[in-house]
Length: 199
Image (cartoon, rainbow, N blue to C red):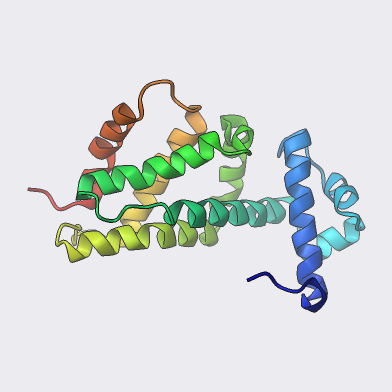
């Protein structure tokens, strides 16, 4: 249900507008070349106002990236088929996130020089890890109900491994030309041992 703009907190509205302008600037100039002045101009506020909401460009990039991660994860999670066999479910869940990154309207922002730069900034941000953990929670819950989820490592460790693989694949390649099944098979081989009980 949409929020009535007349009842929205003005500070939240300004923050949202700054984040929308950030997207436009990133698409136009790239993440690294975008300045706080560019974002202020595009959002129709002063640079001082941008800094009131985001203390630094790194903080702004982190907030923007968290917002984009949440958007992609929410959309993709709604498409998951939790009835798939365990290894296929893990590969499918990761494959859907990768495809969303490669095929989405902002795919050019996921190239190594762009996303790699952002990932270095976000290295210490806990929100992205929380969003990814929320995305994987129904998958892990299903695997736990089926009695096949590893119990010798924590979900946080499993999620961290998946996030590492996801980031490496997303930033190092573009949408692959080979059939999806080949990539799904590779993801099963790569991720299933990290998540599923052996044997």
